[in-house]
Image (cartoon, rainbow, N blue to C red; front, side, top):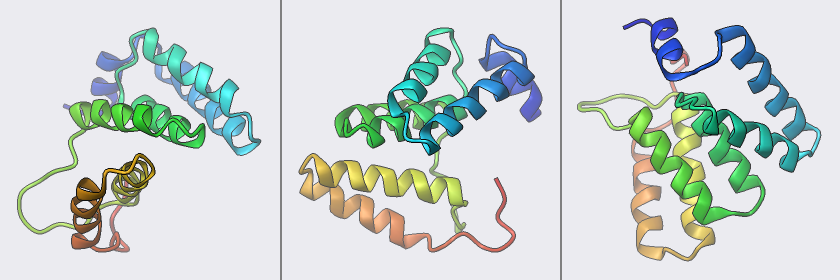
Length: 135
């Protein structure tokens, strides 16, 4: 299934409207308006947008707000929609590495020492994204 069809099936909004709202979330976050950005991301989710981009935005915003346990929950939802794990040798894309790093930081912040070691091993095992890895 093409990316365009999967986004249309997972989002109640047309692509242009959804991209506009995601851009607003990014701009709000860059200017330090974490609460405003979070409201938009949560609204998109409540509207039924089940895309990886919205789940990732929710995880990042929750982390930025210091809600580490909630950020981990958003990452679990993201893993359900867009699983990271694959079989064989592969290099993570920048977005996948960021997701792993975010999970690692959240686990560290809530004091999950055993899970931090596993997350760190997973993060380090796959190395940096290659120059031709695109997202």
